[in-house]
Image (tube, rainbow, N blue to C red; front, side, top):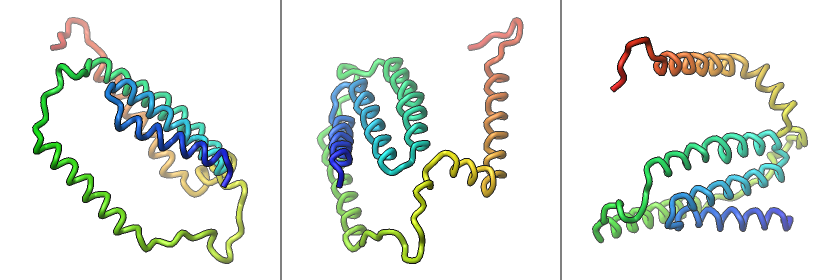
Length: 170
């Protein structure tokens, strides 16, 4: 294992724990951004440059800005949060513990496998050129249907947001 992989794994685990245990929701979002950046580093180590770039642009960029906007808009703080009874905390701990137990029981006999026998390793598998060839040959119809769906959603959003002269919004 490379030292860079170990460092990125350490940062990802610590920042993920920071997401869960941070008292301030804004700090939690910032820890989540750090987690996304460390996962993008893992994607780069796996030779998936396009996936790393999309992860940074979409998740660490757009989605986190949206999360920060919602958190700041809601003005979440400890004073306005309702008090949770002790029974709810105990039930959450039991549910989390049983989920961990189920995951450990399900994954205890799993053996990691390497590259399947008889297949050649392709070092260009995560590159943009290979992704483009696959996208525009084998997955052309789903790609075009998704683009039409996004176009219809954008037109619908514009039509819903457009105000007519004299129209009142409640």
